[in-house]
Picture 1 (cartoon, rainbow, N blue to C red):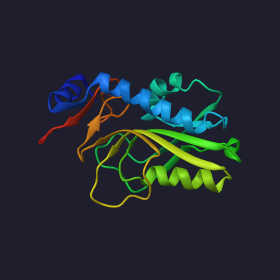
Picture 2: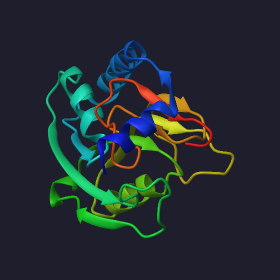
Picture 3: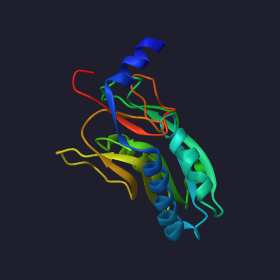
Length: 183
């Protein structure tokens, strides 16, 4: 990993969602979440590490009582292509039992990771599972689930920014970019 590689990735990408569009979408998602679960004292779980930025943007807009924690289930390990093997680094705690659980993640790609999280949380006795993602990738194949709240549908390209990375770089961008052909 080095600065030149990060700059190369950036120069071979294009902005597909502006900072203003990201902020407006976060506000709309927060309004929808508030309308649905603000009376439930939900447990909000952030999927580390990609959801850290999205979580930090969304949580201040959820102006109702909630409990917050994190989980870490990974497939990508800083690579462009995901591996089929999932690894729990931090599993959900027992506090999910009998709770409305809202899981936040940066992107729903094929949906396998979120489905594994949902299954684990429901097996642990959660009353209800909801998911919110900043982006959902548009794919031609069926997915095991779709998010309950979604900021943007994005094309089937590699996207980064707002917590999503490209080879470990650019999670810190306030916009969403997509790699161009030949990147």
